[in-house]
Image (cartoon, rainbow, N blue to C red; front, side, top):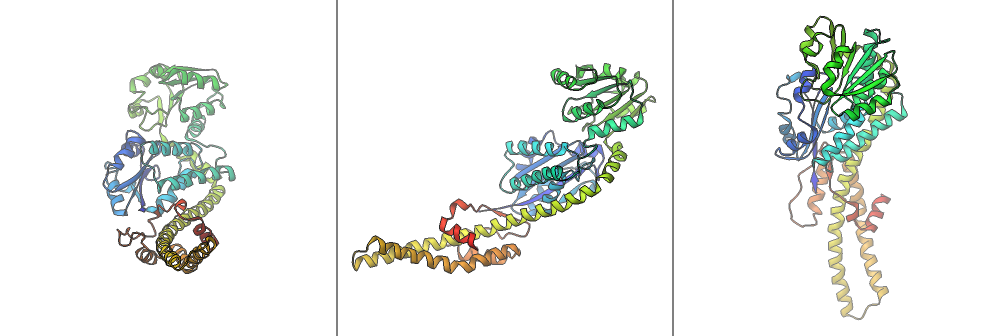
Length: 445
């Protein structure tokens, strides 16, 4: 039997700057997960890193160990920008993230894919277990429901499209040349958004040229794909450019834009693709993620009604998940109770049948009658405790559950698991380990 409580920490656009988010991010998700798993007392770990958030979650036997493991998550970020989360807050936050309620662009679609990718990478690094698995799976389910059952993602649905809308407001794009640096998901969304404007040419620069060329072929605007090393040259010819790579260093420095003339730069990358020193160049107007606030505020207002619906959806799904945790906690104790009773029953049944056999040979029918009597006695005696334990779990009455574990420990004196709390979902009970006639009785309750 195992226990686990989630502890989480987040550094996001809500309270932190782009530089602070950048400083909190690890080299990659897998590295972050492995580092967290190396911390004392950590059984599971998950990390999420996007352009506007860096988050980490751990599962430990108790909350203190989890908080200790996350204490150095963002050492260079001021205290007010780092938000700590307990078990239930972490679960609810993951649901909000997946639904797009925590995104800079309310309801944006890209985050659910990023969450799913981070989930698989954390699993590959050995970080996902019996507590994080159902929690993140439920969050992804909520994210999918939000987008299929509401209008939360209508209109501007990504930072890429928000960047192009900002560019369209700040510049007359008719006949302009646009440069998109990066052919990943963000770059693809920006390129698609540019396709709906009046630009005359689109250049896509990417480390892998075939990816850039493939994206160029997808848009209707005349476009070409070039290597990342050609980005400085392309920037000199472009009136507007959007950058969104995963490069750990600057892709475009000040020299690349020094002679470019009037250029609008929108840097969506984290860490930044464009050297902040370009802000000193008079003809260059540079924006980063924080500059998209005005556009995202308008989107947020239009989606307010849908967001309220999603909030109610999260409340429902959150309660279902917590109830399922509680049910598993109760069923684990019930399983131990029946296992203990079955051991006693089998022992006493063997003794009774042996004594009866010594008084005269028993028929198979007589043997079945005695065995059925024993089963019926166990079922009837444990019916009331079964209901009481489920009620206790529903009411967070862990004293009753711990007492039951002591009374019905099938090991008869073995080590006792620690007492759970309302925030420590007890996992480990497996319905496959419970006899079918026991499951039938449980389902009838």
